[in-house]
Length: 306
Length: 209
Image (cartoon, rainbow over all chains, first blue to last red; front, side):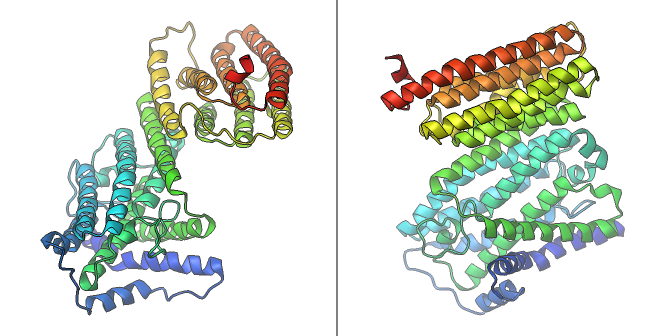
């Protein structure tokens, strides 16, 4: 009974609260700038509005463009069923779900990229090429960081890794955990097109990556993409929180609210980073991602020393 | 545990030196590295002799070297390493491979003594390799001097690994420190600054002519 309750609460919390993360980030940024800002629930209003509009399709697009938002949404929902919140198993937990989650995220990226190319717009093609270039560097960092954690905890599923993290591990192997945290933070910012890599607020700017690829989507399709972007942010924040917080010292009734709170703390930190930093020059972004790869490899080497 | 934290600090400072182009930041980071290494021998055993050497090396590496290097920086008006032979991205990726290589080497290195931390020898070798790499891959003479200091830090760390059993080695290490310091500061920087003023080039190969 308890296990089923956890299994239902985990994805439900992600699905309901994910757009709120974007609202919190906007709220933090507005506060830093001294503005009143949009209401916290604005992302929900946007989604609601978009769902009631009808989609417009250009005559040059094919079925790929129409399938893209659906594939993205369903794949990201699958990933939310894999990543646990706090302590305990999820519906889709199995040994090796690390790999499935990473490749589902890769599938989403692939579909967004071919959807963007399908429009035939050179502008979107440019965004697609940037996305591919940066994710080719962010993905190894993500994989190696996960490999380091898997080696550290001797388990290959998210739920086992999350529950294997204990305060003693922080005392004895703080090096690995710190390096992995740093690498995952950089990957989180890069994968969710946050500020040092991409500016989510710029529209029609030549420097943007993610926003440019979904320029042609409208109506419910665009709502699906916005919602999957919010879920993706939630998932990365949940992975980060799971790698940091020792969850198995507390009972599950506490661990789930604590990790939800921690995910919102992560979004506040993202808001602070966005308010304090400028976007990196495009040629400097690979440098940042190389740093993430190097940190992840160092973490992996540390786990081999133990 | 504290030894391990200092080792992590050493590795991260090495990565920073590999990845930044700003010379002032590099100088500061190398100073931090020197201070961290200076504290290292005091963690295991406390003797007056050790304390004197630790204080000496901290003053030298944490205060004297950075101040002198920063002054040269101001005199030369050179703030950045513009175009190294090996780019910063590649240098950063080189770091983990160097660490892996030194871990592998240190496993096959027969040591006469047991060592406090298994990380000490690989990290010392890693620091040495990074120092050498900086010397080889950068163009500005000042960065090469920094590489020299990093390499020397590696030698010092290596000495620390067995210093517990052989106090003489510490003394020799510190003596070597002082010698290297005087040599580097006195001769190299002087020549470099003179050459920079006269020839006005930022490539070391031009110094030969």
